[in-house]
Length: 115
Image (cartoon, rainbow, N blue to C red; front, side):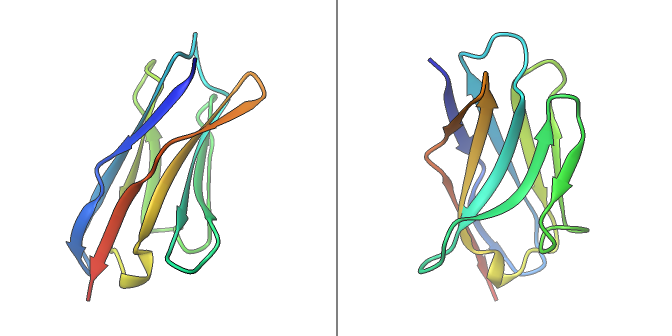
């Protein structure tokens, strides 16, 4: 059974930084891809960043230059380093792991950026 758990959210002032962690358990060898999404109140969930099993990455326009997605070596753990945070980054951030053609979504972690 694959399980995904996010951590690292919190309250931060505008201009500050946070690092989110996503740990996937129950995966043998490596994931196919792990992605970050976010959902702000009253809005639809949107893509933030993705890292493929081979290490390549891609970002939403809103995240480029401020957010960095990375993985922890051989572990099925990825990070989302968020710098220069803005109030509009306030949302619940979700991690999704893709493994053997199935997607597994975590419960989310709240990020609140105060102005």
